[in-house]
Image 1 (spheres, rainbow, N blue to C red):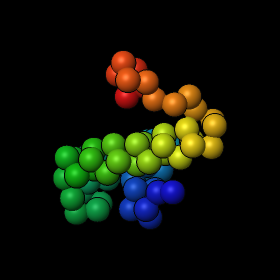
Image 2 (cartoon, rainbow, N blue to C red):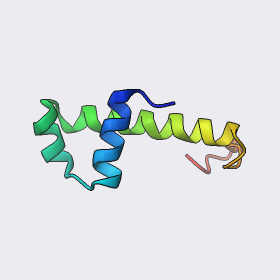
Image 3 (cartoon, helix red, strand yellow):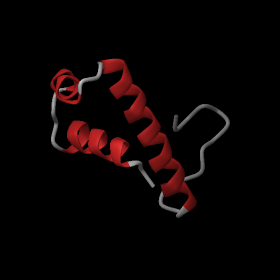
Length: 65
């Protein structure tokens, strides 16, 4: 459900605990672009997991953002 780019960034930042500054330098990008890619990856994961019944559906109260 993630693009290869999103997966690479999510794994590096969340699993391998690579510093965002180090990753930005390695990929030739900036922190803002990585934050955006990570945000999009988390959103796609949440949508997929909710659709599969692993997470509750989002509420309209702003919880689970």
